[in-house]
Image 1 (cartoon, rainbow, N blue to C red):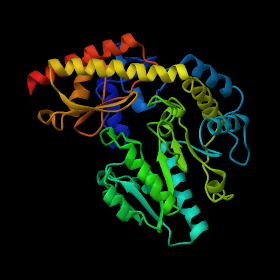
Image 2: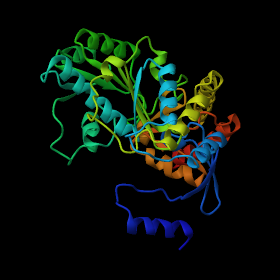
Image 3: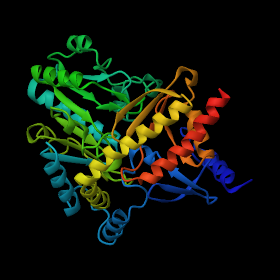
Image 4: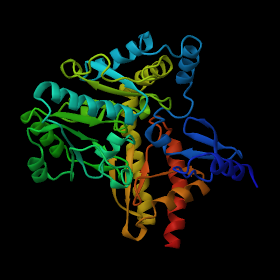
Length: 405
């Protein structure tokens, strides 16, 4: 039994079976390269599922973590700390937000947003204004509230009874949207790009219509930018490329570039409903996480880095289109910036996992987004030559599956 098989056996013996780890055990990473426990090198085009915006072990992030670790790790939310305040102030300066709540994950950030929306509606209008509108195929987290709000039944099945008064509608269906949002709607929550369900773009016109209807019915608009935020789309947040502003914004994943942290941001008026004791998090806003996130925010918000995201997007599109001419495998490229989805042709329906698995044999780390989409979410600072080499390895994957199908 080789080292990889031994570790996978230990996993099966001690871990709950909700994850199925790949037949490769990462051991060390640097930038967009990863080495497994047997010393093999891979190009990482996954970014830890859009988390590692600055790659593995970015030296400035590591230095900040080490420095903070020698000062203060945790004090509880009976106190505040300078790292948390500095990060909150910076997030407010760079967005529409005036107030920030820190959590540990995207699920927790969205949980806070949804709770705040209901509490604010209760404070403003009473108990009847409690409906939450979400989109079919959306994904907002794994807590009971967020998994119920998400529009994919496979994630909520068997966990009932689920929280009530949550309505799901199709994206880009304006007729259904108008028929659903009403004076009893407390909030609409959406991802600017529905990443987990297939990197599905939502039209700007549809999002603008949601904003207008929310204003008309005094409902809040929640932008879930857990995956699209922190430079992923070529701007610090995706909403900044649209002619609108949400009422609540959530972010996680790349906020800590691998260190667990989430944030829910909103206005002073709305935040007043989070009265003392109404919500909290034991570890949310701890000094380690907030110090790391501040450094990540400083680096990612640099206009030169964001311009680089748009440049690297073009390299991916050019490379993928070239591969597709040789070995047709997709019929559409979706997403923005370095959140890229390739919709597989019908002949490859259900085989996204095969592409991901075969990628490891060619030393390239890939992602699926549902069974029919290949997703790329690499580091925002991945080197141009690594993109080209990663796509060269990916071409071998496509060729092999093209010949076998």
